[in-house]
Length: 441
Ligand code: ADP
Ligand code: MG
Image (tube, rainbow, N blue to C red; front, side, top):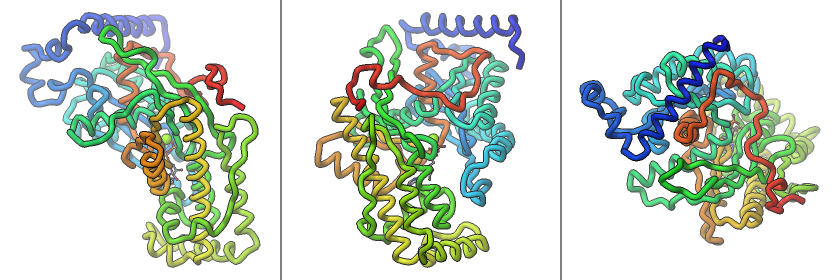
């Protein structure tokens, strides 16, 4: 795609036209405007007649190619995720080059499937939201360039979304859907302290509305970073420990299941100590502590035997894998998981206390962890703190969360232009110290 002056001005024209449309529509329901008589026959059969803004989300930051169509930031019409786990499993981690190639193969079928299963033609969408970072640049570029080209070809507005922002919005999106469906769930309230915990990230944010809600201006959000991991992310630690013990990839789900058979108090890993900001995380020491418990012991031989056993099989059921694990291995796994969960929970509660909020969101792949979820429910009951998680399908990488976060940017006119590009590192929110929250140390 070129970046000539003519093309830039077309983008600028499209941007201004979009903003003008929103201003014009503000006093009247956009539903009525869209529901024009000429369009009636075509729209009667589609969701486009019911919702005022349909956003196509595209996510390809790591090893999932995903596309979704979300209506009005509050209803998932389709969400398609093509996982690359089988491609990377034999390497015990994501291989960037292979990930980019898989994205190239999958992006078009995945977007088509999202459009078909939502019964929304791509021409009926109102905007495209793509993940612009952080992530693997080669992977990000596939989704980003595809989204950019689609937006350009269809003359639709485009927004770039931070992957972490997407994970945070997964909580709001599902909460709205549940409430609209009449489910008896607590309402998500802001400000909230948000723990984003996955294979690539472990960060705490203070998430709030940027200004009081009013009819006259769209909702905007602000994110203040309170803490983050200084080395490994929690999901990365799960994956590396699983690799060390030959338990398969990704490690989080399998450790989660096997840990139920182990004694979580068997190994005392102690508390993880942090110098400086007490809301930062560090999991590489814990991972090394597991290594020292294994190296040169019978657990190492057992892991090698298991590795050979696993290599001869595909998709080993967890019960069969458990039969290949000694009680000492199961105890080690359970103790490791317990140490990670305790650390995540303690720092998140400390952040909530420092920020003086009683609402906590937890999202990202590790938010699927059953012990973390159970502990959060206990804390919520005991301390009267509202803790919200998305369902597992919205915790791990997906495009519905990108469309949901993008919806607010589209409404606010925060549109991208042709210069939108991928960023391996793409910090969300300023440091809390700069904001004077007083949690640094
Ligand atoms: P990314 O890290 O690319 O943002 P995801 O948000 O999809 O990806 O998270 C994937 C990570 O979540 C992996 O590290 C995986 O091991 C971890 N994970 C998934 N399910 C669980 C679980 N039940 N317990 C702990 N970790 C989990
Ligand atoms: Mg993620």
